Structure formats: C-alpha cells, structure tokens
Length: 289
Image (cartoon, rainbow, N blue to C red; front, side, top):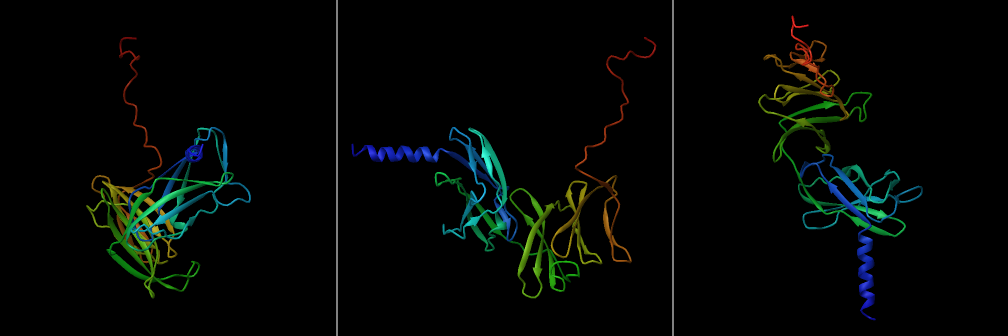
C-alpha cells in the first residue's frame, strides 16, 4: 500500500497539468531596446467542463515570467485589466498582451519569457513553453533635438528624435526613438514599418516639431509617417510611384511638410474592379441573334 500514495499523487499531478494547454507566440525573436513586445497567448480547456478564468474581485489570471541569459528571474510581470474569460470544454481563447507595458528590459542580451495561467478554484498554475528573444540596439542614422511645444505632455522639455535602421534575419525596418536631450535617457522606441533601401528615407521636422519620415516600404510603395513631439504616431499614409513619378517630401514657407508626386492610396481599400470589356460566354456574337 505504501507504493499507492506516490502513484496516486503522480496521477493527480498529471490530471491537474492536463486541465489547460497554454501556448505563446512572439512576432519575432529580435527586438530593439524599449520596443513594445507583443505576446499572443492561447489557452485550450482540456478539463472536460466549462471553466471561468478571472471574475469580479479576483486577481488577474494571466501573468508572465521573464528570465535573463543566466536564467535569473526578473520582476514578475502581472497583467492588469484582463477581463473574465469563459472557455467551453475543448474550447480555445487567445489574448494579445504587450508584455513590456509592465516590464521592459533595456539591457542588450538574451531573455526568456513564459506565460502563466492561474486557475483560482484549484490554485493551479499552467505555463507555456519558454520562448527565447533578444534585445539589441543600433546607432541612429539620423538625430535632431527639439523642444516639446505647449499642448503636449512634457511641454518645455528638450528631447531628441532618433531614426534607426534595424536589419533582422530576413527583413529591414525603420524605427523612431525619443530621447531626453539633457539626460540622454531613452524614453520610447517603436517601429514605423518595413523599409527597402533602394532610396534613402527623407526625414524632416515641421513647424510644430513633429517628425516626418517618407520611406520606401516596398517596391513602388512609399509610407509617410508623422510622429508628434510627445512620441505618439500622429499619421501614417501611403503613396504609389506611378510611371517614374516618385513621391518627394518638401517644406513650404510656413514650415508645413508637403508630399509631391506619386498617387495617394489607401491599402485597406480593395483595388478598383477592372472595366468589363468582354462579353459573357452565353452571349452570341453579333449577327448570330
């Protein structure tokens, strides 16, 4: 009988571990320092009955554990504001979380990330496979100091825009970073989009000290991004090069940025239908009616 207790404990442990299947994906493995890192967590209910995660007055049911290259655990990453989730038996839900909203590693190096799902009634935690990612950095290809105007958060402070070119395993992207110009503290980093370096990006400030960047996002397609002095992405629009008419950025006498050349277009809209110059198969040729 003394062998039954360990066997029973093992069976209960395996049963508990089988309640939820937790998976996690990251969009890529390399990120710039201070860049937002989105994680997509997938939870499948294997308990055989409907379960509820979270609820009024309960602690958050989703958290993350991050480790550095030595395996040392960093600050626990608690996710606030995750709503109650009901999962039917055999059902699956997904949640996309910006992990770095709670904790953002700034040191260059390798890190590990694990998602943890808490089932409050049983007190059990279910974890995903640990994913590895890298924090890296590059020198800016362009920098410009500016003062934050009135009406923006941080008005009156001196900051600096930095435009960074980052080449990953199979793509090249353009990033913007905000830096405190006095302390040199990096405040924010975010991706503008993919870039093709057949033409150098055009970069300028307008009269409101907003950053304007015009760059080749893919063959014959240009992106125009406007970043406000507080670091928010104010605008992203696209232009198509037509018959060698390439979009160009210029500044008018009032200090406003203008885009000349190319054709403005909205990539979210479906392409126009081609004109119907033919006839249906069922139509008879002229003279055979």
